Length: 120
Image (tube, rainbow, N blue to C red; front, top):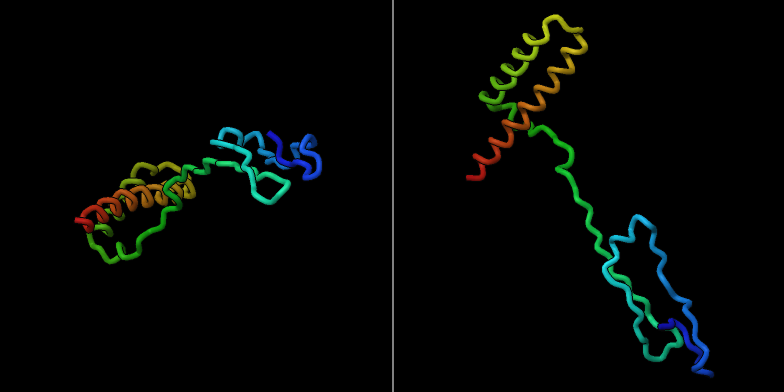
């Protein structure tokens, strides 16, 4: 099929209109077609893409309302105490990083439980 034809001589036609698709988007192309347009010497070009990027959970942020929850505070104190005890002979900067990791992990676990209880 052609995307342009001469209004004077129908034997003259060309493929002038097209989409250029990069190699990494090639698998996203679902359909392409040439569509006749009334009153124009050009045909329309249609391109259907499957654009959908799988997204992760995003950036985790602490729900500061948990800071008023005594059970959460005890959970975090316990996580810190356990981490400090298991890293006694380590460099203080390593202990600090390990504490931050355990606080984050305990907070995510607690807040997911907290959210599922609040949803009931």
